[in-house]
Image (cartoon, rainbow, N blue to C red; front, side, top):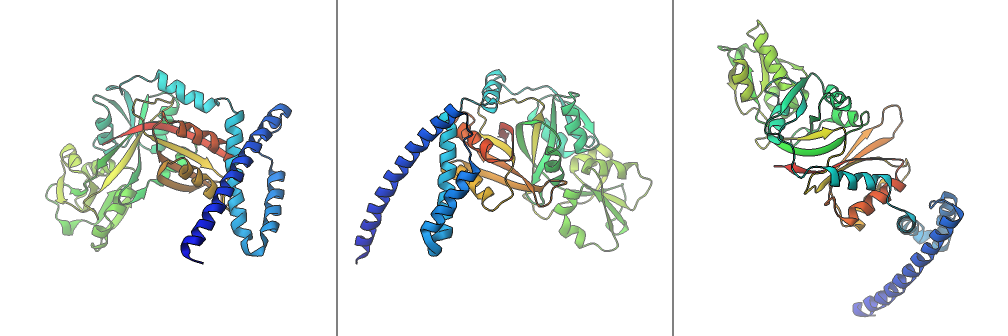
Length: 380
């Protein structure tokens, strides 16, 4: 047979498949109506397990795995279809729509904002990029920032989420599991690291260098080129600069910023020490209650999926089927649970899109745990 003949045969089969799929979905809708009348749940694990066993037997050994994959997808679509037919707007949908209505049209210029570190910290730069006249509350730890927002000590908190060179700030993702909060804004800050020391200090005199672990990673090539120098991790690049300024030693230095050099009266011993010139850190602005400002196009989610093969695939397939772009996927182990992970997603979709609400509805029914972290705009 010619290729054109084979393709024509496939087209005919596809036509039959589509008609049968439509018929199956119609019957699935009738099943949903019956379940609603009888009070039965949409998901029936026993029924699905038997169905998969049956179609596997029908497919035979040659096509068993492909058939199971196909029917896993069909069952997921069927569940979503039934949930859409039966469901009234859920609590989360109502919460998001209420937040859209109640959030002011303009992002505030003034607010009490918690930042980790001290004067000169990069989190301060991110804060001043988002707010015209913030009242900044400096705290020693990231946990402290989350706690201050959670207890209402401030309205907002600024936290670093990821760096273009060193990657994600894992401590932030771990703390996300501990606190309830909402992301209301994000921004990127250009990070330019320099080596600071007391006036008159020469490079060859330095024996100890202090900075945040992310900054040390971002300057790893420079640090590896040094000999006889000990590297120390501290809470913040600005705190490192302040500690050097307050020290009575002349053989210590800090990896920090030019802003901290002027702020703490330190000398720049060496500039441009980062591995990459194009070095940016992404910061998020969090609040206790959801705030969704006009133009919100990015949404962050956290979820725990069933610990079995194909679970993450079925979640990912929903993004594709709805035409929603996935910007970020991060996984973190869950403390106290063996080989179980929390997955963090950033998705690119307008908060006003029907596909957005359809996705949320489907994910809530598919995941063991699901959390909506907020919809927001990223400020360049």
